[in-house]
Amino acid sequence: MPEREREREREQVDWSDVRAEAWDRFDVRRFRRGQRELIEAALSGRDSIGVMPTGSGKSLCFQLPAVLLPGTTVVVAPLIALMQDQTDKMAEADVGAARLDSTLTEREKRAAERSIRRGAKELVYLTPEGIENPAVLDPLRAQGVSLFVVDEAHCISQWGHDFRPSYLGLAQAIRALGRPPVMALTATAPPVVLDDVVARLDLRDPEVVSTGIERENLSFEVRECAAAGTKREAILELLREAQGSALVYCATIRLTAEVHAYLRGAGVDAELYHGKLRPGIRAEAQRRFMGGEVPVMVATSAFGMGIDKPDVRLVVHWNFPDSIETYYQEAGRAGRDGAPARAVLLFRREDKRIQSFFMGGRYPKRADLQAAWDALSKVAPAALAVPALGEASGVGKRRAQVVAALLESMRVAERKAGRLRKVREFPSVDAWDAFLAAYERRHEGDLERLQAMIRYAQTALCRVQMMREYFGEERAEPCGRCDNCRRRPAVVEEVLRVEAEAAERPGLTPAADVP
Image (cartoon, rainbow, N blue to C red):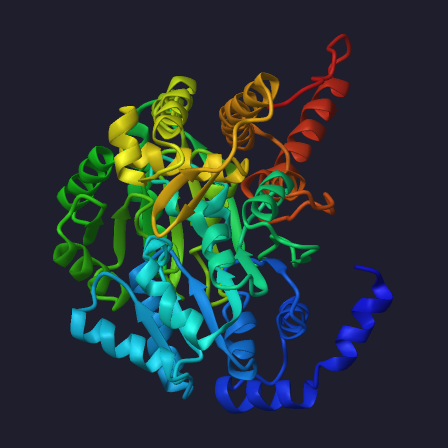
């Protein structure tokens, strides 16, 4: 959009009303960096993407417009616990908010839907799986949606082993709600992920607001661990040094249980959290950690997204994750209160096999795509429910969701009320081959992101500089906080000492490189 048109939009926003509501409802007297631009885009009816670090106030960017816009603001968030926390906070701010999720009874769900139809709820929180239910969309359509928010939008592009296929169906839900303006929010997104978010949400000339990844209170460190025993020694040392709560991330459920058992055996008061625990046990573990009863949480990536515990002083990764963006997301749960905090990676190159295993089962195979397309073509022009497509093609329910979203993205199929229908043929054999090739390139991109994570762990350069470059920012000056920056003055001093000693002993060549 030309800058002159954007200036006209800015003039249409009454900022006296915006500031008054910010003060009265949220006790906000001054906007943080990036907030004003995103709020302005929402109030002007524009699509937007916000890339802002953890703790920078992303939620206000949609909560404040929700109060000022005439219809309902829909927020798609990945975790029910996060939605519960936000609806409670909105009640304190006298903002009408509801959540529609699997924990509600039928009576509670009907009551929430009635209040939405009456226009009593300015904010409605949904999981990506919940918004796939056509019945959920009816009360929202009846009231009218003024803004559609996708929180943790990087999930659209990061198809990890804990991937949520329902994120791929959000564009269809947005169209079903009348195509309201869309706001996508995340703490991390390199350029390739931003492009993916724009494409998969079908955003129109979005206002992109990126405030950078820099968090001056957070220091990064990597400890090379040649063996598992070295990791055990390192983690005990780190936890003893921690002056507050600590999070320990492990790549698998088995490793999470093993590390938890080891720490408890060493006298560390720690909780355990992973997706295979019963919901009640998980909820109690989270309550004890969040409430400060237990200082250490050992968890898989199932714990953390949206967790707002300000006094986490240390985040340790027992294994390196699949990408720098995943690492930065999880490391960023430290130091949300602005006080100094540490993010430490215990690095063993052998851990690569764990991520390689996950990647091997991440995507449907080329043959799966062909089988699903053939199954859909056989019943055309009739439609198939997505689980039925999985059964008919033999690809399974979970992979069928991915296939359905991919075929929708090519405009050769469409989904209504949870049923997928073929609407046209691929224009040519070449187009089908190009579709399959583009899909396979996603796997290649995953391998590149994994290699970037390994380079981060092994670099001797400033780690924050490397992350800045990865996320498409200017390199800027070294951070001065990471382990490499702290080590550098000592290295220079050692070089000078060796050269001075060599100068005193003729015939010796000064050392050219000191580790």
